[in-house]
Amino acid sequence: SYELTQPPSVSVSPGQTASITCSGDKLGDKFACWYQQKPGQSPMLVIYQDSKRPSGIPERFSGSNSGNTATLTISGTQAMDEADYYCQAWDSSTHVVFGGGTKLTVL
Amino acid sequence: VQLVESGGGLVQPGGSLRLSCAASGFTFSSYDMHWVRQGTGKGLEWVSAIGTAGDTDYPGSVKGRFTISRENAKNSLYLQMNSLRAGDTAVYYCARGLRGTYNFDYWGQGTLVTVSS
Image (tube, rainbow over all chains, first blue to last red):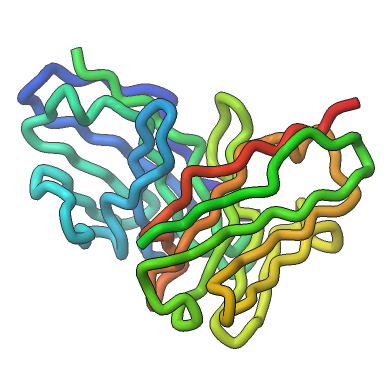
């Protein structure tokens, strides 16, 4: 079955750039997306089709996907960006697959 | 867009439960719909999908036990869960499929299912 691997945690200082990675076999050949989930809330789509932002998502959120790694980048990270982030892709064997999630701490 | 789940609760192992999701604010019949679950303190797990034509899809972990269905006239999505196990304990989210993708652009607030004796 297909698996996506994320680091359990990432820390960043306010105003700096945070990068969260998602690794999977030939992930660059698939579309990756990213969800943000704050405590007690439902997930929210922040990036889809590797690098597209849904309406209402700030420009500081960007994404890329190449080789075996997709990356979510948050530029000028704010305290409100502290959350869990999940990558997700579609694979012909597993169909919908999520990464294990990364807790972003802004300190 | 609003998605409101209901039907969660406490059920014994081996029991059944039917979840519902009431959709509003969009043309329900034109979108694929999904169920995604999240165990307490755990990550997200896709549970089922139903296309606009009624075609369905499941991961191996629930295939044969869970059945997704939709009733477009009522703007409603359902998940029939049978032979429930402790490992099925989770918050179950209803989610709308982003057109042309297997991504989810709107999520409900979730309903908690607890499988325990």
